[in-house]
Structures are given as structure tokens and as C-alpha cells.
Amino acid sequence: KDEDMVKEMEALSGVLKKHGVQVYRPKVIKNCNQIFSRDIAFVIEDKIIRANILPERGREIEAIRYVWNQVDRKNRIVLPDACHVEGGDVMPWDDYIFMGTYSGKDYSKYITARTNINAVNAIQELFPNKKVKAFELRKSNTNARENALHLDCCFQPLGKGKAIIHKNGF
Image (cartoon, rainbow, N blue to C red):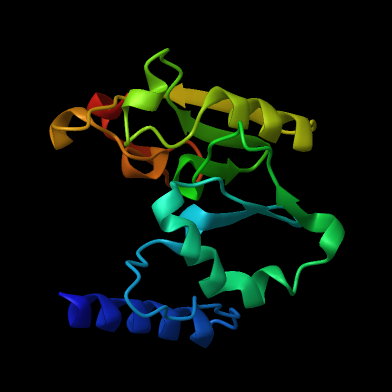
């Protein structure tokens, strides 16, 4: 329920603030399903990258426009239209950028395919000193058990040398 999620988010925000972290929250847009603001824009180093997301999610960028506008213009990146990417598929970690992707010729058939190889290549060009590693994710429009929507749904690094992995997502 919404009220449960709000309680959890407020608790997390409280913990972060207690440790001196500046917390930025998206503005609420009426009648808009705003779930994960990281999907619509994400940060690597000093750059904020606007995701090329599904058209029906396009309004969500307005919720974080005030954050976007705080970043120096030279560090605001909008990828070319051919680069499809959502932040849940992008995971910076030390000298690496892990990315979930789907590279099948039937990419456009899957509404669950959110990041393509064009975006992987664009991120590598933007960050030539990083090692960009793409991971092919399983996709299904009809069976949730055969689909990994984003990399962060099936892979989470835990410090050095450890990770939580859902093998069936790859």
C-alpha cells in the first residue's frame, strides 16, 4: 500500500539525514505512477544522465527537474534517441559500470526490454576510464518468473567480493 511505502521511504530518508546525507526526493506529480526516480535519471561521477524511457513515463522527469537544474550544464547528459536506457540497468561500482541489457533482434517486441546495446556503447564512450560490463537479461512480457526488468532486480554488489545474484535473471 502507498502508506506502507511512504513510511519505509521516510524511515530510510531519516537514517540517511542522520548520517549527514543530503536527500533529494522527487516532487509528487498528480495522477502519475512514480515508482523509481533512478530509472528516469542516474548519476555517474559528476554527470547526471537522463534516461530514454518508455514514452508513457516521460512526465516523470518533471519530478526531478529541480535536481537536474542544480547540475552544471556541461555535466547534464541526454543520450541520443537510439540509446534506450533506464537507471535500474546501470550500476556504477568502483572502476566498473555494470549494465543490464537485452540485445536480441526482437528487442522492440519486449516492453520489459529497457536498455539496449546502443546505450551500453554510449556509456562506455562517456566514461572511457571505466570498464563497462554488459549483462544479458532474460525478458518476457507475460511471465514474471522468466523476466528480469532491470539489472538491480537480479544483482546487488555487497562490498568487496560479494553480491546477491538471482541466476535465473541472466
